[in-house]
Figure 1 (cartoon, rainbow, N blue to C red):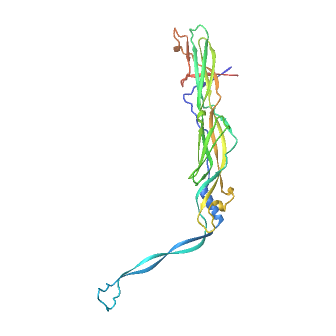
Figure 2 (cartoon, rainbow, N blue to C red):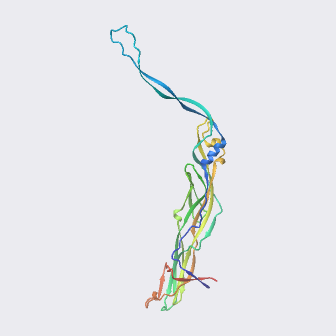
Figure 3 (cartoon, rainbow, N blue to C red):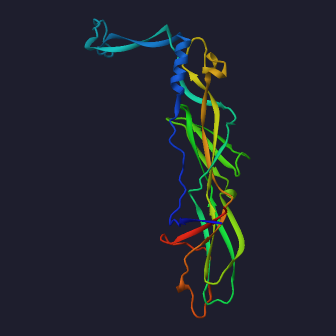
Length: 326
């Protein structure tokens, strides 16, 4: 056996090791507009309302002749006023124009394809459970110290998008990791608007995992024994790729083209890639190590010959000595 000293930490936490990802963005609206420009102008017949000005005059009818009067000379109507008004006449014309698209939407998504999974141990982020026993100097025999150690770890997951699609109507694709990881992670990727977003969830029954270890050791008279189970995160990284195929409504035209797919029938020309990385943290199997600590006389009295402290938390100033194999 050889001895190596470690200091117990008062705060241990899990931090993500994933760095920022610079996403590549495919603007669906820009891509569709470019495709329509490549397709070129088409005849479009429109009816325009062409304005013209006309003069309108109002006249007052003369009074009618009374009963029994005849032979009178007819009196002409008198002019009251004249004014101008604008009249719109329909005029049909045909011009060649580029088509425009609206309601760009996802009509199909490809199944998720997973890349090579990697896993990394993070042993410097430790979640411990520690028990200690002191066999007092006034004890008559070695102490059999039975201990039970337990560490509960909350599994975590996240998703980062590296290739996104924007400016479509909202669309969400749902998938999960299946048996690729030690636990199932569900994910959703939402396409549309200004960005592509991803969310993940760990299955409720698998959110928390507990590592345990039970055993016993012999503590000599006047000695201290510390047993610690150490659990640390294992980070899994799983790249994925999928694609979305879009369609859109075209502006009215004389060729009867209604949809983007009418001019781009091959779905490949309307398909854009979405990719990213799913990461998840699980607990390691756990490592149990034996330690010694300084003898503390205050834990012993004339009537108390031993002290056992389950779930012991060493102070930040307490120095523990870990026993390691040669």
